[in-house]
Length: 81
Image 1 (spheres, helix red, strand yellow):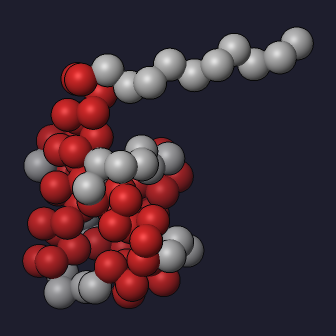
Image 2 (tube, one colour; image 1 turned 90 degrees about the vertical axis):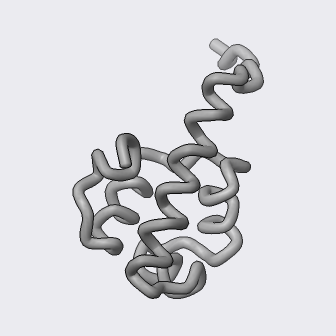
């Protein structure tokens, strides 16, 4: 059975995605890591980290856990600051 087409994210989803990205960027800078170095630590490229930080692409749960570990913070910090 074919998968139904995905709906585009609504305004609330986009706002939440951007908020998580802002937290990732803040924590990454506080840890003095470049996007490239964080990407290496989590197995993604710099462009993917940039997309996460700018809310252009939603990070998977696995990626969020890996990012939190690389930044030395609990995963919930990415959601609640």
